[in-house]
Amino acid sequence: MSSLQNISSKKDQENWEIEIKAEITPEALTRYRGEALKDLTKTVQLKGFRAGHAPESEIIRHVGEAEIMRRAADMAVRNELPELLAKEQANIVDSPQVTVDVPKPNEPLGFTARAPLAPEITLPDYKKIAAETNLKRGKPEVTEKETKETLIHIRRERARIDAIESGKKPEEAAEAARAMKEEELPELDDTFVKTLGYENVAAFTAKLAEQLLNEKTMQENAKDRAALLENLVKQSKISYPSMLKNYELDDMESRLADDVARLGRTMESYYTEVKKTRDELRKEWLPSADTRVKTRLILAEIARKESIEAEPKEVEHELAHAKKHYAQAREETLRAHITHALKNEAVLKWLETQK
Image (cartoon, rainbow, N blue to C red; front, side, top):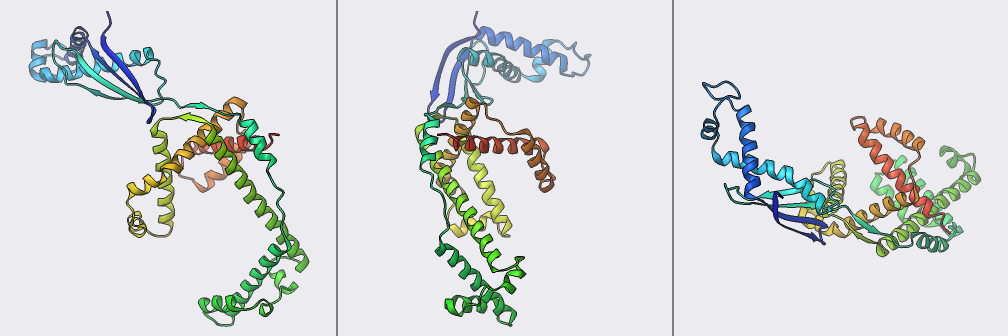
Protein backbone atom coordinates (compact mmCIF):
# COMPACT_ATOMS: atom_id res chain seq x y z
CA MET A 1 0.00 0.00 0.00
CA SER A 2 1.33 3.40 -0.99
CA SER A 3 2.26 5.84 1.76
CA LEU A 4 1.27 8.80 -0.45
CA GLN A 5 -2.03 10.09 -1.78
CA ASN A 6 -3.43 13.12 -3.64
CA ILE A 7 -0.17 13.65 -5.56
CA SER A 8 0.02 16.57 -7.98
CA SER A 9 2.91 18.33 -9.71
CA LYS A 10 3.41 21.33 -11.96
CA LYS A 11 6.28 23.16 -13.60
CA ASP A 12 6.89 26.83 -12.97
CA GLN A 13 8.04 27.76 -16.49
CA GLU A 14 9.24 31.23 -15.52
CA ASN A 15 11.48 30.10 -12.65
CA TRP A 16 12.06 26.64 -14.15
CA GLU A 17 11.15 24.80 -10.97
CA ILE A 18 8.92 21.87 -10.17
CA GLU A 19 6.32 22.00 -7.42
CA ILE A 20 5.01 18.73 -6.02
CA LYS A 21 2.17 18.43 -3.54
CA ALA A 22 1.20 15.23 -1.78
CA GLU A 23 -0.23 13.79 1.40
CA ILE A 24 1.20 11.06 3.58
CA THR A 25 -1.60 8.70 4.54
CA PRO A 26 -2.76 8.54 8.18
CA GLU A 27 -1.62 4.90 8.36
CA ALA A 28 1.89 5.77 7.16
CA LEU A 29 2.10 8.74 9.52
CA THR A 30 1.11 6.48 12.42
CA ARG A 31 3.90 4.10 11.42
CA TYR A 32 6.44 6.93 11.31
CA ARG A 33 5.18 8.14 14.69
CA GLY A 34 6.06 4.74 16.09
CA GLU A 35 9.56 4.93 14.60
CA ALA A 36 10.07 8.44 15.98
CA LEU A 37 8.96 7.29 19.43
CA LYS A 38 11.42 4.37 19.30
CA ASP A 39 14.27 6.73 18.41
CA LEU A 40 13.34 8.99 21.30
CA THR A 41 13.22 6.04 23.68
CA LYS A 42 16.86 5.28 22.81
CA THR A 43 18.13 8.84 23.26
CA VAL A 44 16.01 10.61 25.90
CA GLN A 45 17.46 10.43 29.43
CA LEU A 46 14.81 10.27 32.16
CA LYS A 47 15.55 10.33 35.86
CA GLY A 48 15.02 6.93 37.46
CA PHE A 49 15.34 4.96 34.21
CA ARG A 50 18.31 3.45 32.46
CA ALA A 51 19.00 4.81 28.96
CA GLY A 52 16.68 3.10 26.50
CA HIS A 53 14.47 1.53 29.18
CA ALA A 54 12.00 4.32 29.96
CA PRO A 55 8.34 3.40 29.21
CA GLU A 56 6.85 5.01 26.10
CA SER A 57 4.18 6.63 28.26
CA GLU A 58 6.92 8.47 30.18
CA ILE A 59 8.67 9.51 26.97
CA ILE A 60 5.37 10.91 25.61
CA ARG A 61 4.73 12.77 28.87
CA HIS A 62 8.26 14.20 28.91
CA VAL A 63 8.61 15.14 25.21
CA GLY A 64 5.02 15.88 24.31
CA GLU A 65 2.84 14.51 21.56
CA ALA A 66 3.36 17.58 19.34
CA GLU A 67 7.14 17.07 19.26
CA ILE A 68 6.73 13.38 18.52
CA MET A 69 4.40 14.16 15.62
CA ARG A 70 6.79 16.83 14.36
CA ARG A 71 9.62 14.29 14.29
CA ALA A 72 7.34 11.74 12.64
CA ALA A 73 6.40 14.27 9.95
CA ASP A 74 10.05 15.14 9.32
CA MET A 75 10.97 11.45 9.06
CA ALA A 76 8.03 10.73 6.76
CA VAL A 77 8.82 13.53 4.29
CA ARG A 78 12.55 12.78 4.35
CA ASN A 79 11.92 9.12 3.49
CA GLU A 80 9.05 9.50 1.02
CA LEU A 81 10.17 12.57 -0.98
CA PRO A 82 13.14 10.99 -2.86
CA GLU A 83 10.92 8.18 -4.18
CA LEU A 84 8.24 10.71 -5.10
CA LEU A 85 10.73 12.83 -7.05
CA ALA A 86 11.97 9.72 -8.85
CA LYS A 87 8.42 8.72 -9.81
CA GLU A 88 7.76 12.20 -11.14
CA GLN A 89 11.04 11.98 -13.11
CA ALA A 90 12.05 15.36 -11.70
CA ASN A 91 15.60 16.12 -12.83
CA ILE A 92 16.43 18.57 -10.07
CA VAL A 93 19.76 20.32 -9.45
CA ASP A 94 19.43 21.36 -5.82
CA SER A 95 17.77 20.22 -2.61
CA PRO A 96 14.01 20.85 -2.56
CA GLN A 97 12.50 23.49 -0.31
CA VAL A 98 9.79 21.72 1.64
CA THR A 99 6.86 23.10 3.61
CA VAL A 100 4.91 20.69 5.80
CA ASP A 101 1.47 21.10 7.32
CA VAL A 102 1.05 20.76 11.07
CA PRO A 103 0.82 16.99 11.68
CA LYS A 104 -2.25 15.65 13.47
CA PRO A 105 -2.88 12.08 14.67
CA ASN A 106 -5.08 9.94 12.41
CA GLU A 107 -5.11 12.59 9.65
CA PRO A 108 -3.17 12.77 6.36
CA LEU A 109 -0.08 14.98 6.39
CA GLY A 110 0.11 17.44 3.52
CA PHE A 111 3.41 18.82 2.24
CA THR A 112 4.76 20.82 -0.71
CA ALA A 113 8.21 20.42 -2.26
CA ARG A 114 9.69 22.95 -4.66
CA ALA A 115 13.01 22.36 -6.46
CA PRO A 116 14.99 23.89 -9.35
CA LEU A 117 15.08 21.80 -12.51
CA ALA A 118 18.17 21.05 -14.58
CA PRO A 119 18.53 23.50 -17.49
CA GLU A 120 17.15 22.44 -20.86
CA ILE A 121 19.05 23.71 -23.90
CA THR A 122 18.19 23.44 -27.57
CA LEU A 123 21.05 24.84 -29.61
CA PRO A 124 20.74 26.22 -33.14
CA ASP A 125 23.21 25.24 -35.89
CA TYR A 126 26.10 26.82 -34.03
CA LYS A 127 28.66 25.75 -36.62
CA LYS A 128 26.76 27.60 -39.32
CA ILE A 129 26.32 30.70 -37.15
CA ALA A 130 30.02 30.69 -36.32
CA ALA A 131 31.00 30.24 -39.98
CA GLU A 132 28.78 33.17 -41.03
CA THR A 133 30.30 35.36 -38.34
CA ASN A 134 33.82 34.32 -39.36
CA LEU A 135 33.13 35.25 -42.99
CA LYS A 136 32.34 38.79 -41.90
CA ARG A 137 35.63 39.17 -40.09
CA GLY A 138 37.69 42.02 -41.44
CA LYS A 139 41.47 42.29 -41.44
CA PRO A 140 42.39 45.04 -38.98
CA GLU A 141 44.73 47.70 -40.32
CA VAL A 142 46.35 50.70 -38.71
CA THR A 143 46.12 53.83 -40.83
CA GLU A 144 48.77 56.52 -41.05
CA LYS A 145 46.27 58.89 -39.47
CA GLU A 146 45.87 56.65 -36.42
CA THR A 147 49.64 56.32 -36.04
CA LYS A 148 50.11 60.06 -36.42
CA GLU A 149 47.40 60.83 -33.83
CA THR A 150 49.05 58.47 -31.36
CA LEU A 151 52.44 60.07 -31.94
CA ILE A 152 50.92 63.51 -31.34
CA HIS A 153 49.41 62.25 -28.11
CA ILE A 154 52.85 60.99 -27.03
CA ARG A 155 54.45 64.32 -27.93
CA ARG A 156 51.75 66.10 -25.95
CA GLU A 157 52.49 63.84 -22.98
CA ARG A 158 56.17 64.70 -23.33
CA ALA A 159 55.26 68.40 -23.26
CA ARG A 160 53.25 67.84 -20.08
CA ILE A 161 56.11 65.99 -18.38
CA ASP A 162 58.62 68.64 -19.49
CA ALA A 163 56.38 71.32 -17.99
CA ILE A 164 56.17 69.46 -14.67
CA GLU A 165 59.94 69.02 -14.59
CA SER A 166 60.36 72.75 -15.23
CA GLY A 167 58.37 73.51 -12.08
CA LYS A 168 54.75 73.78 -13.16
CA LYS A 169 51.97 72.15 -11.15
CA PRO A 170 50.51 68.98 -12.72
CA GLU A 171 47.16 70.64 -13.45
CA GLU A 172 48.83 73.65 -15.08
CA ALA A 173 51.17 71.40 -17.06
CA ALA A 174 48.28 69.31 -18.39
CA GLU A 175 46.31 72.42 -19.39
CA ALA A 176 49.32 73.96 -21.12
CA ALA A 177 50.02 70.73 -23.06
CA ARG A 178 46.39 70.50 -24.20
CA ALA A 179 46.51 74.10 -25.46
CA MET A 180 49.66 73.63 -27.58
CA LYS A 181 49.36 73.43 -31.36
CA GLU A 182 50.91 70.49 -33.14
CA GLU A 183 53.82 72.47 -34.48
CA GLU A 184 54.56 73.72 -30.96
CA LEU A 185 54.88 70.25 -29.48
CA PRO A 186 58.35 68.85 -28.79
CA GLU A 187 59.73 66.60 -31.49
CA LEU A 188 59.93 62.89 -30.92
CA ASP A 189 63.68 62.44 -31.34
CA ASP A 190 66.16 59.64 -30.73
CA THR A 191 67.16 61.09 -27.36
CA PHE A 192 63.59 60.89 -26.07
CA VAL A 193 62.76 57.40 -27.38
CA LYS A 194 65.98 56.05 -25.87
CA THR A 195 64.53 56.95 -22.46
CA LEU A 196 61.65 54.64 -23.38
CA GLY A 197 64.02 51.78 -24.22
CA TYR A 198 64.22 52.13 -28.02
CA GLU A 199 67.28 52.65 -30.20
CA ASN A 200 65.82 55.36 -32.41
CA VAL A 201 62.59 56.95 -33.63
CA ALA A 202 62.21 54.43 -36.47
CA ALA A 203 62.35 51.48 -34.08
CA PHE A 204 59.91 53.17 -31.73
CA THR A 205 57.48 54.00 -34.54
CA ALA A 206 57.59 50.43 -35.86
CA LYS A 207 56.88 49.03 -32.39
CA LEU A 208 54.09 51.53 -31.89
CA ALA A 209 52.45 50.46 -35.17
CA GLU A 210 52.71 46.83 -34.07
CA GLN A 211 51.12 47.59 -30.70
CA LEU A 212 48.33 49.60 -32.34
CA LEU A 213 47.63 46.69 -34.69
CA ASN A 214 47.56 44.20 -31.80
CA GLU A 215 45.20 46.43 -29.86
CA LYS A 216 42.93 46.88 -32.87
CA THR A 217 42.97 43.13 -33.54
CA MET A 218 41.97 42.40 -29.94
CA GLN A 219 39.14 44.94 -30.17
CA GLU A 220 37.86 43.44 -33.42
CA ASN A 221 38.09 39.92 -32.03
CA ALA A 222 36.14 40.97 -28.94
CA LYS A 223 33.51 42.60 -31.14
CA ASP A 224 33.22 39.52 -33.35
CA ARG A 225 32.94 37.23 -30.32
CA ALA A 226 30.23 39.43 -28.84
CA ALA A 227 28.28 39.28 -32.12
CA LEU A 228 28.67 35.49 -32.29
CA LEU A 229 27.49 34.98 -28.71
CA GLU A 230 24.60 37.38 -29.20
CA ASN A 231 23.40 35.35 -32.19
CA LEU A 232 23.80 32.09 -30.31
CA VAL A 233 21.79 33.41 -27.36
CA LYS A 234 19.05 34.77 -29.62
CA GLN A 235 18.68 31.54 -31.58
CA SER A 236 18.95 29.10 -28.67
CA LYS A 237 16.00 27.87 -26.65
CA ILE A 238 17.00 27.74 -22.99
CA SER A 239 15.12 27.13 -19.78
CA TYR A 240 17.02 27.38 -16.52
CA PRO A 241 16.25 27.82 -12.80
CA SER A 242 16.13 31.35 -11.45
CA MET A 243 18.82 30.53 -8.89
CA LEU A 244 21.42 30.63 -11.71
CA LYS A 245 20.40 34.19 -12.47
CA ASN A 246 20.70 35.05 -8.79
CA TYR A 247 24.23 33.59 -8.77
CA GLU A 248 25.15 35.93 -11.64
CA LEU A 249 23.60 38.91 -9.87
CA ASP A 250 25.59 38.04 -6.74
CA ASP A 251 28.78 37.85 -8.80
CA MET A 252 28.10 41.20 -10.48
CA GLU A 253 27.40 42.77 -7.10
CA SER A 254 30.56 41.27 -5.61
CA ARG A 255 32.71 42.62 -8.45
CA LEU A 256 31.20 46.08 -8.05
CA ALA A 257 31.81 45.96 -4.30
CA ASP A 258 35.47 45.06 -4.91
CA ASP A 259 35.87 47.98 -7.33
CA VAL A 260 34.23 50.38 -4.89
CA ALA A 261 36.39 49.11 -2.01
CA ARG A 262 39.57 49.63 -4.05
CA LEU A 263 38.58 53.29 -4.31
CA GLY A 264 38.35 53.42 -0.53
CA ARG A 265 34.58 53.78 -0.51
CA THR A 266 31.58 51.84 0.78
CA MET A 267 28.63 50.44 -1.13
CA GLU A 268 26.34 52.69 0.92
CA SER A 269 28.15 55.77 -0.40
CA TYR A 270 27.98 54.34 -3.92
CA TYR A 271 24.21 53.83 -3.65
CA THR A 272 23.89 57.45 -2.52
CA GLU A 273 26.01 58.69 -5.42
CA VAL A 274 24.06 56.83 -8.12
CA LYS A 275 20.77 57.56 -6.32
CA LYS A 276 19.64 53.94 -6.46
CA THR A 277 19.01 51.18 -3.96
CA ARG A 278 20.64 47.76 -4.06
CA ASP A 279 17.38 46.20 -5.26
CA GLU A 280 17.04 48.78 -8.03
CA LEU A 281 20.55 48.07 -9.28
CA ARG A 282 20.00 44.31 -9.26
CA LYS A 283 16.77 44.80 -11.19
CA GLU A 284 18.66 46.82 -13.82
CA TRP A 285 21.22 44.04 -14.09
CA LEU A 286 18.63 41.32 -14.78
CA PRO A 287 18.94 41.38 -18.60
CA SER A 288 22.75 41.19 -18.37
CA ALA A 289 22.55 38.39 -15.81
CA ASP A 290 20.16 36.48 -18.07
CA THR A 291 22.55 36.81 -21.02
CA ARG A 292 25.49 35.70 -18.90
CA VAL A 293 23.67 32.58 -17.71
CA LYS A 294 22.60 31.64 -21.23
CA THR A 295 26.08 32.24 -22.60
CA ARG A 296 27.62 29.97 -19.95
CA LEU A 297 25.07 27.24 -20.64
CA ILE A 298 25.54 27.49 -24.42
CA LEU A 299 29.33 27.24 -24.22
CA ALA A 300 29.08 24.33 -21.78
CA GLU A 301 26.66 22.48 -24.07
CA ILE A 302 28.85 23.01 -27.14
CA ALA A 303 31.84 21.77 -25.14
CA ARG A 304 29.87 18.66 -24.21
CA LYS A 305 28.70 17.99 -27.76
CA GLU A 306 32.11 18.56 -29.31
CA SER A 307 34.13 16.96 -26.47
CA ILE A 308 36.12 20.14 -25.89
CA GLU A 309 38.14 20.30 -22.69
CA ALA A 310 40.66 22.67 -21.16
CA GLU A 311 44.27 21.67 -21.76
CA PRO A 312 45.63 20.17 -18.50
CA LYS A 313 49.01 21.89 -18.97
CA GLU A 314 47.32 25.26 -19.35
CA VAL A 315 45.23 24.61 -16.25
CA GLU A 316 48.33 23.80 -14.19
CA HIS A 317 50.20 26.81 -15.53
CA GLU A 318 47.37 29.22 -14.75
CA LEU A 319 46.77 27.57 -11.38
CA ALA A 320 50.40 28.09 -10.34
CA HIS A 321 50.14 31.74 -11.36
CA ALA A 322 46.82 32.23 -9.54
CA LYS A 323 48.09 30.67 -6.31
CA LYS A 324 50.78 33.36 -6.12
CA HIS A 325 48.18 36.12 -6.29
CA TYR A 326 45.41 34.43 -4.29
CA ALA A 327 47.37 32.61 -1.61
CA GLN A 328 44.35 32.40 0.72
CA ALA A 329 42.01 30.85 -1.86
CA ARG A 330 41.30 27.11 -1.84
CA GLU A 331 43.12 25.27 -4.60
CA GLU A 332 39.97 23.34 -5.57
CA THR A 333 38.08 26.59 -6.07
CA LEU A 334 40.85 28.14 -8.14
CA ARG A 335 41.19 25.01 -10.26
CA ALA A 336 37.45 24.86 -10.96
CA HIS A 337 37.34 28.55 -11.92
CA ILE A 338 40.42 28.29 -14.17
CA THR A 339 39.24 25.07 -15.82
CA HIS A 340 35.85 26.62 -16.55
CA ALA A 341 37.40 29.78 -18.04
CA LEU A 342 39.90 27.86 -20.19
CA LYS A 343 37.21 25.49 -21.45
CA ASN A 344 35.06 28.44 -22.51
CA GLU A 345 38.07 29.99 -24.27
CA ALA A 346 38.72 26.68 -26.04
CA VAL A 347 35.11 26.57 -27.26
CA LEU A 348 35.32 30.14 -28.57
CA LYS A 349 38.58 29.41 -30.40
CA TRP A 350 37.00 26.29 -31.89
CA LEU A 351 34.01 28.30 -33.09
CA GLU A 352 36.39 30.82 -34.69
CA THR A 353 37.81 28.03 -36.88
CA GLN A 354 34.46 27.10 -38.42
CA LYS A 355 34.12 27.71 -42.15
